Image 1 (cartoon, rainbow, N blue to C red):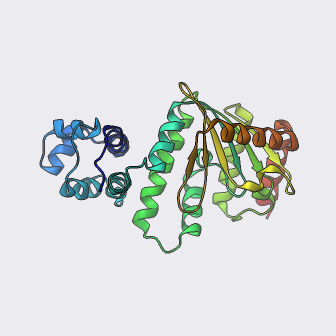
Image 2 (cartoon, rainbow, N blue to C red; image 1 turned 180 degrees about the vertical axis):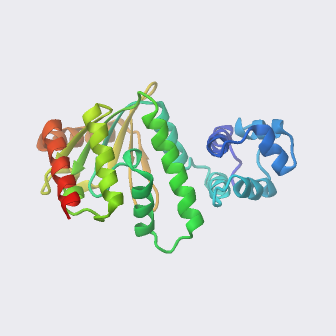
Length: 269
Protein backbone atom coordinates (compact mmCIF):
# COMPACT_ATOMS: atom_id res chain seq x y z
CA UNK A 1 0.00 0.00 0.00
CA UNK A 2 1.47 3.33 -1.06
CA UNK A 3 1.94 6.25 1.29
CA UNK A 4 -0.56 9.03 0.73
CA UNK A 5 1.11 12.12 -0.68
CA UNK A 6 0.27 15.62 0.61
CA UNK A 7 -1.35 16.43 -2.75
CA UNK A 8 -3.71 13.46 -2.49
CA UNK A 9 -4.55 14.27 1.14
CA UNK A 10 -5.35 17.84 0.11
CA UNK A 11 -7.58 16.66 -2.72
CA UNK A 12 -9.52 14.37 -0.39
CA UNK A 13 -9.73 17.22 2.10
CA UNK A 14 -11.28 19.48 -0.53
CA UNK A 15 -13.86 16.77 -1.28
CA UNK A 16 -14.67 16.66 2.46
CA UNK A 17 -14.99 20.45 2.59
CA UNK A 18 -17.33 20.50 -0.42
CA UNK A 19 -19.53 17.82 1.13
CA UNK A 20 -19.64 19.59 4.51
CA UNK A 21 -20.52 22.89 2.87
CA UNK A 22 -23.20 21.20 0.79
CA UNK A 23 -24.82 19.88 3.99
CA UNK A 24 -24.64 23.33 5.62
CA UNK A 25 -22.44 22.28 8.56
CA UNK A 26 -19.63 24.23 10.18
CA UNK A 27 -16.34 22.56 11.06
CA UNK A 28 -17.22 22.83 14.74
CA UNK A 29 -20.64 21.22 14.25
CA UNK A 30 -19.18 18.38 12.24
CA UNK A 31 -16.44 17.89 14.82
CA UNK A 32 -19.01 17.63 17.64
CA UNK A 33 -20.95 15.03 15.64
CA UNK A 34 -17.78 12.94 15.36
CA UNK A 35 -16.65 13.56 18.93
CA UNK A 36 -13.54 15.49 17.86
CA UNK A 37 -12.52 19.14 17.74
CA UNK A 38 -13.41 21.43 14.88
CA UNK A 39 -9.70 22.02 14.36
CA UNK A 40 -9.33 18.31 13.53
CA UNK A 41 -11.90 18.74 10.73
CA UNK A 42 -9.98 21.79 9.55
CA UNK A 43 -6.74 19.79 9.48
CA UNK A 44 -8.37 17.00 7.48
CA UNK A 45 -9.78 19.48 4.97
CA UNK A 46 -6.34 21.05 4.54
CA UNK A 47 -4.67 17.66 4.09
CA UNK A 48 -2.68 17.95 7.33
CA UNK A 49 -4.43 15.12 9.16
CA UNK A 50 -5.42 11.77 7.65
CA UNK A 51 -8.88 10.41 8.52
CA UNK A 52 -9.05 7.24 10.61
CA UNK A 53 -11.29 4.34 9.47
CA UNK A 54 -13.79 5.34 12.16
CA UNK A 55 -13.66 8.98 11.02
CA UNK A 56 -14.40 7.89 7.45
CA UNK A 57 -17.46 5.90 8.46
CA UNK A 58 -18.79 8.68 10.68
CA UNK A 59 -18.14 11.37 8.07
CA UNK A 60 -20.03 9.43 5.40
CA UNK A 61 -22.92 8.83 7.81
CA UNK A 62 -23.10 12.36 9.21
CA UNK A 63 -22.75 14.07 5.82
CA UNK A 64 -25.04 11.52 4.12
CA UNK A 65 -22.37 10.87 1.51
CA UNK A 66 -23.43 7.31 0.76
CA UNK A 67 -19.92 5.93 1.37
CA UNK A 68 -18.44 8.35 -1.16
CA UNK A 69 -15.76 9.81 1.12
CA UNK A 70 -14.55 6.40 2.29
CA UNK A 71 -14.40 5.04 -1.27
CA UNK A 72 -12.55 8.13 -2.43
CA UNK A 73 -9.96 7.83 0.35
CA UNK A 74 -9.37 4.13 -0.30
CA UNK A 75 -8.92 4.71 -4.02
CA UNK A 76 -6.40 7.46 -3.42
CA UNK A 77 -4.52 5.55 -0.73
CA UNK A 78 -4.39 2.22 -2.53
CA UNK A 79 -3.64 3.48 -6.02
CA UNK A 80 -1.74 6.66 -5.30
CA UNK A 81 -3.79 8.19 -8.10
CA UNK A 82 -6.03 11.20 -8.27
CA UNK A 83 -9.71 10.34 -8.01
CA UNK A 84 -11.17 11.33 -11.36
CA UNK A 85 -14.35 12.89 -10.02
CA UNK A 86 -12.51 15.03 -7.49
CA UNK A 87 -10.07 16.23 -10.12
CA UNK A 88 -12.93 16.86 -12.57
CA UNK A 89 -14.68 19.08 -10.04
CA UNK A 90 -11.47 21.04 -9.48
CA UNK A 91 -10.90 21.51 -13.21
CA UNK A 92 -14.45 22.78 -13.65
CA UNK A 93 -13.93 25.28 -10.86
CA UNK A 94 -10.55 26.54 -12.04
CA UNK A 95 -11.07 26.51 -15.82
CA UNK A 96 -11.34 29.68 -17.87
CA UNK A 97 -13.04 27.81 -20.71
CA UNK A 98 -14.52 24.37 -21.29
CA UNK A 99 -15.15 22.75 -24.67
CA UNK A 100 -17.43 19.71 -24.41
CA UNK A 101 -18.88 17.17 -26.82
CA UNK A 102 -21.72 14.86 -25.79
CA UNK A 103 -23.29 12.23 -28.08
CA UNK A 104 -26.06 10.81 -25.87
CA UNK A 105 -26.82 13.01 -22.86
CA UNK A 106 -26.91 16.67 -21.93
CA UNK A 107 -23.67 17.80 -20.21
CA UNK A 108 -23.67 17.19 -16.46
CA UNK A 109 -23.18 20.89 -15.68
CA UNK A 110 -26.39 21.65 -17.59
CA UNK A 111 -28.54 18.90 -16.13
CA UNK A 112 -31.59 19.50 -13.97
CA UNK A 113 -31.90 17.40 -10.83
CA UNK A 114 -34.78 15.29 -12.15
CA UNK A 115 -33.01 14.62 -15.44
CA UNK A 116 -29.80 13.68 -13.60
CA UNK A 117 -31.66 11.28 -11.33
CA UNK A 118 -33.46 9.75 -14.30
CA UNK A 119 -30.15 9.19 -16.11
CA UNK A 120 -28.44 7.71 -13.04
CA UNK A 121 -31.32 5.31 -12.39
CA UNK A 122 -31.41 4.23 -16.05
CA UNK A 123 -27.64 3.64 -16.22
CA UNK A 124 -27.40 1.76 -12.90
CA UNK A 125 -30.85 0.43 -11.93
CA UNK A 126 -29.34 -1.88 -9.31
CA UNK A 127 -27.77 0.81 -7.08
CA UNK A 128 -29.43 1.93 -3.85
CA UNK A 129 -31.50 5.09 -3.55
CA UNK A 130 -28.92 6.39 -1.08
CA UNK A 131 -26.20 6.16 -3.75
CA UNK A 132 -28.45 7.87 -6.31
CA UNK A 133 -29.17 10.66 -3.83
CA UNK A 134 -25.48 11.12 -3.03
CA UNK A 135 -24.43 11.21 -6.68
CA UNK A 136 -27.27 13.56 -7.62
CA UNK A 137 -26.40 15.93 -4.75
CA UNK A 138 -22.77 16.06 -5.86
CA UNK A 139 -23.71 16.68 -9.49
CA UNK A 140 -26.17 19.43 -8.60
CA UNK A 141 -23.55 21.12 -6.41
CA UNK A 142 -21.22 21.24 -9.43
CA UNK A 143 -24.04 22.53 -11.63
CA UNK A 144 -25.00 25.27 -9.17
CA UNK A 145 -21.41 26.38 -8.82
CA UNK A 146 -21.19 26.67 -12.60
CA UNK A 147 -24.44 28.64 -12.90
CA UNK A 148 -23.55 30.96 -10.03
CA UNK A 149 -20.23 32.01 -11.58
CA UNK A 150 -19.09 33.60 -14.83
CA UNK A 151 -16.50 30.94 -15.60
CA UNK A 152 -15.72 28.68 -17.18
CA UNK A 153 -17.09 29.80 -20.52
CA UNK A 154 -18.82 26.67 -21.80
CA UNK A 155 -18.95 25.83 -25.50
CA UNK A 156 -20.70 22.53 -26.15
CA UNK A 157 -21.51 20.47 -29.22
CA UNK A 158 -24.34 17.98 -28.84
CA UNK A 159 -25.24 15.15 -31.15
CA UNK A 160 -28.67 15.58 -32.68
CA UNK A 161 -29.40 12.08 -31.40
CA UNK A 162 -30.02 13.62 -27.96
CA UNK A 163 -32.97 15.43 -29.52
CA UNK A 164 -34.21 12.92 -32.08
CA UNK A 165 -34.09 9.98 -29.66
CA UNK A 166 -34.72 11.46 -26.18
CA UNK A 167 -34.15 9.05 -23.31
CA UNK A 168 -37.63 9.91 -22.00
CA UNK A 169 -40.66 11.98 -22.99
CA UNK A 170 -41.73 12.87 -19.46
CA UNK A 171 -41.97 16.20 -17.67
CA UNK A 172 -38.34 15.76 -16.58
CA UNK A 173 -37.20 15.81 -20.21
CA UNK A 174 -39.34 18.86 -20.98
CA UNK A 175 -37.86 20.73 -18.02
CA UNK A 176 -34.36 19.70 -19.09
CA UNK A 177 -34.88 21.11 -22.59
CA UNK A 178 -36.36 24.32 -21.18
CA UNK A 179 -33.35 24.70 -18.87
CA UNK A 180 -30.76 24.24 -21.64
CA UNK A 181 -32.72 26.50 -23.98
CA UNK A 182 -32.77 29.26 -21.36
CA UNK A 183 -29.02 29.01 -20.83
CA UNK A 184 -28.30 29.03 -24.57
CA UNK A 185 -30.56 32.01 -25.23
CA UNK A 186 -29.17 33.87 -22.21
CA UNK A 187 -25.59 33.58 -23.44
CA UNK A 188 -24.25 31.58 -20.47
CA UNK A 189 -23.63 28.66 -22.80
CA UNK A 190 -22.73 28.48 -26.48
CA UNK A 191 -24.44 25.42 -27.88
CA UNK A 192 -24.33 23.73 -31.27
CA UNK A 193 -26.10 20.63 -32.53
CA UNK A 194 -24.23 18.34 -34.92
CA UNK A 195 -26.35 16.12 -37.22
CA UNK A 196 -26.15 12.37 -36.77
CA UNK A 197 -23.70 10.74 -39.17
CA UNK A 198 -20.01 10.34 -39.84
CA UNK A 199 -18.03 12.93 -37.88
CA UNK A 200 -15.09 13.11 -35.43
CA UNK A 201 -17.44 12.81 -32.46
CA UNK A 202 -17.79 9.08 -33.03
CA UNK A 203 -14.81 8.74 -30.66
CA UNK A 204 -17.20 9.40 -27.78
CA UNK A 205 -17.76 12.16 -25.20
CA UNK A 206 -14.87 14.40 -24.15
CA UNK A 207 -14.08 17.74 -22.50
CA UNK A 208 -11.20 20.15 -23.04
CA UNK A 209 -10.31 22.33 -20.04
CA UNK A 210 -8.29 25.52 -20.32
CA UNK A 211 -7.23 26.29 -16.72
CA UNK A 212 -6.34 29.75 -15.48
CA UNK A 213 -2.76 28.50 -15.10
CA UNK A 214 -0.97 25.58 -16.70
CA UNK A 215 -1.56 23.52 -19.85
CA UNK A 216 -4.91 22.43 -21.24
CA UNK A 217 -6.30 19.06 -20.10
CA UNK A 218 -8.65 16.66 -21.87
CA UNK A 219 -11.09 14.48 -19.99
CA UNK A 220 -12.34 11.43 -21.90
CA UNK A 221 -15.43 9.82 -20.41
CA UNK A 222 -16.05 6.10 -19.98
CA UNK A 223 -18.55 3.91 -18.16
CA UNK A 224 -16.09 2.87 -15.43
CA UNK A 225 -13.98 5.96 -14.87
CA UNK A 226 -12.69 8.95 -16.73
CA UNK A 227 -9.25 9.35 -18.25
CA UNK A 228 -7.26 12.56 -18.16
CA UNK A 229 -4.98 13.42 -21.06
CA UNK A 230 -2.44 16.23 -20.82
CA UNK A 231 0.19 15.26 -23.42
CA UNK A 232 0.40 18.19 -25.84
CA UNK A 233 0.02 16.15 -29.08
CA UNK A 234 -3.06 14.36 -27.75
CA UNK A 235 -4.64 17.60 -26.50
CA UNK A 236 -4.02 19.19 -29.90
CA UNK A 237 -5.70 16.21 -31.55
CA UNK A 238 -8.84 16.64 -29.43
CA UNK A 239 -8.93 20.39 -30.10
CA UNK A 240 -8.77 19.67 -33.82
CA UNK A 241 -11.56 17.12 -33.40
CA UNK A 242 -13.72 19.67 -31.58
CA UNK A 243 -13.09 22.26 -34.27
CA UNK A 244 -14.26 19.83 -36.95
CA UNK A 245 -17.39 19.09 -34.92
CA UNK A 246 -18.18 22.79 -34.71
CA UNK A 247 -17.66 23.17 -38.45
CA UNK A 248 -20.11 20.35 -39.19
CA UNK A 249 -22.68 21.46 -36.60
CA UNK A 250 -25.59 23.85 -36.96
CA UNK A 251 -24.87 27.44 -35.99
CA UNK A 252 -25.74 28.49 -32.41
CA UNK A 253 -28.87 30.23 -33.68
CA UNK A 254 -29.97 27.26 -35.75
CA UNK A 255 -29.24 24.97 -32.80
CA UNK A 256 -31.51 27.02 -30.54
CA UNK A 257 -34.26 26.67 -33.15
CA UNK A 258 -33.66 22.91 -33.21
CA UNK A 259 -34.04 22.77 -29.43
CA UNK A 260 -37.31 24.69 -29.69
CA UNK A 261 -38.62 22.25 -32.30
CA UNK A 262 -37.86 19.30 -30.03
CA UNK A 263 -39.46 21.01 -27.05
CA UNK A 264 -42.60 21.80 -29.04
CA UNK A 265 -42.80 18.18 -30.14
CA UNK A 266 -42.64 16.95 -26.55
CA UNK A 267 -45.19 19.43 -25.20
CA UNK A 268 -47.60 18.58 -28.04
CA UNK A 269 -47.62 14.87 -27.08
